[in-house]
Every structure is written in C-alpha cells, then in structure tokens.
Image (cartoon, rainbow, N blue to C red):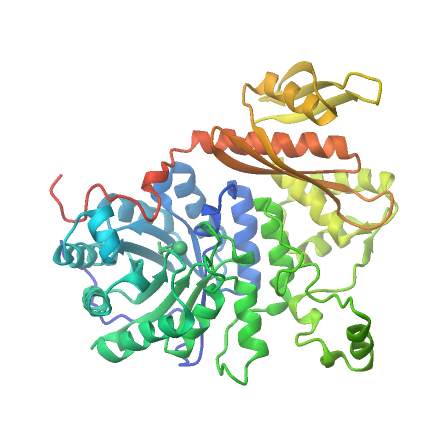
Amino acid sequence: MSAKKAVSSRFKSVPQDPNRIIIFDTTLRDGEQSPGATMNQDEKIQVARALYRLKVDVIEAGFPIASPGDHDAVKAVAEVLDEKDAPIICGLARSLEKDIKCAASAVKNARRPRIHVFLATSAIHRQFKLKKAKDEIVRQAVQAVQFARTFVDDVEFSPEDASRTEPEFLCEVTEAVIAAGATTVNIPDTVGYAVPDQFGSVIRTLKEKVSNIEQAVISVHCHNDLGLAVANSLAGVRNGARQVECTINGIGERAGNAALEELIMALRTRGDFYPYQTGIDTKRLLPSSKLVSAVTGINVQRNKAVVGENAFAHESGIHQDGFLKERTTYEIMRPEDIGLEQSKLVLGKHSGKHAFKNRLKELGYELDEKQLVDAFERFKVLCDKKKNIYDADLIALVEDQLVAAAPVWELELLQVAAGNKAVPTATVILRKDQATYQDAAIGDGPIDALTKAIDRITGVSGKILDFQVHAVSEGREAQGEVDIKCDFDGEVIYGRGFSTDIIEASAKAYLNAVCRAVAKSDAAVKPAERPGHAQPKPVGATP
Ligand code: KIV
Ligand code: ZN
C-alpha cells in the first residue's frame, strides 16, 4: 500500500502566519467521550454551527468507526457546514484500514476534509496494550498515514501517550509519519501526566531533532488530570506548537481536555507574553459554552475560569470598591469580550417571529423553518405563563425542543398527587411512534413515583445519582431547569428538562436521560474500541 499523493502538499487551509495558532476543537469527539455527554445528531449539528460562528479552524466531528450513528453524525456535520469559510472537518481513526476507510467516507463531502489517525507509542502502551515492538509501531503508523493520504491531502497523526514516550522514539515516529505524508503531528498528553516545563521541552526537542519537522504543523492535545491542560498547551505553543486541541468548557475523557475559552482568553489577555493570534471571535465564547452545557447536560461549575457564573462577580467590599473606582483594579478581562451581557429582558408577548429568530441566532441557535415554527409556538405559550422572557428562557426553550427532537419517548401527560399526608402517586402517558402508553406508580416522593411510572412504560430503569433544580432566569415565575445524572446498567447518563413546573421539568429530565440511554445502547460503541484501547487489525496486515 503506498501513498497516492505527493508528500509536499502542506497544510494550506489556514493562514501560514508563523504566529497564527490553529484552533482545533474536539468537543464533538473527545468532549463527547466525557462520561454521560452523549449528543444526538441534531445537537451535534447545533454545536458544529456554534463552532463555525466561533471561528474555530478545525472541528473534530467524531470517531466514525465507533458506531453507524457516529459515522452519520460526522458526515452530517461535514455536509451541513458547506460555507466557503467552513472549518476543516476531521474524523478520528485508529491506525487500522477499516477505521481509516470509515473516517474517509464520513468526511468526504466536507469542503476541507481531514483524517486524524492515532497509534500509541509509549513503552507502557506498547508492552501492555498493543504488545508490539518499536519497529512494528513505526511501520503501522507509516502505513496508516500513507493509507489515509490516498483519501485526503490533510492527514494528522497522533502518537498516543506521547508525553510518556521515550523522546528519541517520539522523534523517530514523528519523522517517519511526516515523511509518509502527515501534515500535522499532534502530541497528546493522553493521561494528563505532563507538567508545563517538561511538556514544553518535548515540543522543543521535536523542533530541534526531527529533520523534516518544518513540513508539518506541530499540535498539542492536553488532558486535565492534574488541572494543567491549559498551562501545558500554552507551554507547547511557547516552544513551537502551532495547533492546539481543546474543547468547549474543557469537557473530555476523565477530567477533560484543555478548555478552549481559557486558552483563548489567556492568549488574548496575556498577548504581551504570547505574541500569537487566533481566528476566534471571543464574543461567541459564552454562548458556545452555554450551548455545549445545554446539549451535554454537563453544568459549568460556578467558579470556572472565563465562563463560570462567578467569573466576573465581585463579592468582597474591598474588591467592589476598587472595581467601581477603576474596573481594571480587579478585572483582567472585559465581560463583553466573552459575550457576557447584562441579563436582558429580550422578548415578550408582542415580539414577532423575525425578532425571535434573530435573537436565537445571536444566541447560537439556527433552526430550520419547521423547528422555528414549533419553537415560536412554544415561545407564545411561555409568554402566557411568564411575563418577562430572558435569554436564559430562550435557551431553555430551544434546548427543550432539541432534546425532544430525536426522542424515543415523549411526555404526553403527567399527573402527580403528593402532600405531607398523601401517598405520592404519578400517572404518566408517554408517546412513542404515534402510539400512547399509560401507567401509574407510587413512590417515596413525587419524583420517585414519576420515575417509576416512566420505568414501567419504557422498560428501562435508571438509578438517580444526582438531581439538581435551578431557576433559569429571574423572578418567582422563573422556569425551572432540572439536571439529572443517572446510572443505567453501569453507564452514567445525564438528562435535562425545563418547565415552569419543576415536577414536569423533573419528568422531562428523567425521560431525556432514558432516551439517551436507549440511543446509546442502540449504538454499537464498545468501550474497548474507543481511543486508547486494543487494535485488532493493523493497516497492511493480511486479512
Ligand atoms: O488523548 C489522546 O491521546 C487522544 C488521541 C486520540 C489524540 O484523544
Ligand atoms: Zn484525548
């Protein structure tokens, strides 16, 4: 098997300014590997659109071989983002023929397709996971890159667990894959073990020792197990990396990946120290963060840097006093630069569909005509229940609709009887494929009763691990948001529901988790086949 295309075709899709940092977003791939963060196809498309508006350079849209659903979602993202300035759409593949073919098929209709192949290189992975010698690893990596190059010009290679790989061997693999046609070499700190000085020196060593390094872009991909993902990524940039892989809100495997918003604001706020540019529209950071939190069900912690609720709140008297005298005494970033505006009364009963559509677009949601008509009807119903409609209400409304867009089961009716002297009882009617199903149950409380009634209908049962209710906007009539974390046969799944009635929001949240669990069990994603696990048939091996 040999590469069809010449190796010389360099990465041409983003400016070649030596100080331009390529932002590679992997929210839809590594981010989706966060426990419980499964997104359906509609949700992935919404996130991809938000990433386009945020102006990321590369979207890693998924791991196509993981399941037919993953393949189709990557394909859909590649096809939906057809604008002239659309980002590169990338699909992940192990260094296996079947994975590479599958990734190639998923990204083939993108304006700028990329295939990202990976293979572990560290001694620990070679010995215990792959059971392969160094020369076999080099051979497999080279063949994988060459094979990927027969489909696309833009091929990224990742030596998995690079930060724990012997530096000389990492240089050898890097040189070999660049010679084979890799246009980007991504250096992952797969287990978040690196510390900034050391990680920076890994990148510097590659720059100094790999003879053909100038023929590829060096990328970094850092995990956050020690809370150092952003610091390590920045150290990589200081030492020559020109692509950074990151996710919105830092979601990802285990403790997550480098948070895009933190990285971008660090580069921007400390431009004196980091003389680099990105193409990111920082005003889209907060809307993108809210969207990802909404579709994954993973809340952003209040004190999270840049996008947390408290990131711009000044509590102590001394700080407030200084801030009022001169903002920069206690604020190093301007809230408006990340898209944080005062909670605004945005729309009301008399607002028209056009204004509604425009505001949704500003918030990062682009709905098709049918979705828009549905959303607008729901908006009018909400206006009857609630006088003041805030941005947060609109996000809740659209998210509720998106969550319901690909449901297996829909809530048709909920009746709950509860009280300090009553036996909590719930009657539930669910809809599935035009048919309705009804059941009732008693429980320890109204939530217990309604989840039991839902379980009786769906035949799926989740154990609630965490349950949180909060108001999405202000006032006594505020909508309630319920976030639920459930265990379905050892699989952690999140669900979210909104309503002005918190019992109904709870039923919606639980049902959302049930639907995600059903969708997940339909998808043939075996954990053992995800990144970081055994590789059955290497590229080039005879069947
Ligand atoms: O963390 C990792 O090593 C990865 C690779 C697939 C890039 O996610
Ligand atoms: Zn990763």
